Length: 405
Image (cartoon, rainbow, N blue to C red; front, side, top):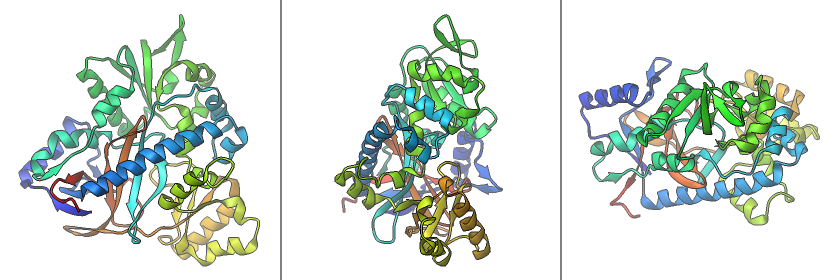
């Protein structure tokens, strides 16, 4: 794995930024005063690409199996941090293969790969991944794009009728994702309606949103927020009838506590656990640390070893990395987690291998999309620290067609 600068002029890069803003609805090209799109790409060999595809599809298959074992057990759903109201919907939901997820793989200093969570609920990056193979190949002579996001998405949703694109309507960054999906549907002359799950109604045996009859829905609205919907009783029926990408049961894999549950020998096979341990850090329910004073003290004594996480959250706001947190603040985090142990897990901190870019080393996460169990493209990001937030930079991922090593 290495990096490469785009073969473009400053004027061409500015044209690219303009196209991202106005053609692909990427309005947040600047975040906190900094440009989050840079004219460099991550280059994978064909072997590295094949390995990531293999890991992605195997993880997706194992997660679906685990999901089926967990979804009808309220005590396990509660252990994953899923609100009771949403758990009730998940228990009633029909089994569905519909999936749009992204798994972020970090290269480690030991030469392997590690994934710290699964973005199964509302994964972002649609605008960039759709634009990349349409705007960037001329800047990447000798490299190929393998993004199939658009065609995979269109094959995953019903190909007739109106699709409800459901999102948190108070967030423009969520709206831009729905607009790019709406554009994809319009390419095959299929109508779509922008709406919130709150807009869902039932009339004459039909599911309606914003006055339009729906044949299916795309959910870009955090599943744990469904507990706050005024029409959540209606959703108890909708989850049994309305095809939805993603179904609410994807919240099971979205929970950061799923890593701890994966260790349960009653839920997973030896082969599944062996694969899990090869790609994911050890994760423990915080309740385990409350059983022994020495275990709890290890959190304070070895901050560089641990990462504290709540089951749900976006952009890292519910994550505390001991290696990056000042001592006094880390003490507060540990104390709070031990006081509310059912709301936290502790995860081993793996060491991310930085990549050299033009302005110095940055820490990468290779994001692999998976739609209905199959690899669909890359959405990768880099950051100045081995902890990705909303300030991370997007970088395309390409495959070196000449390097077969």
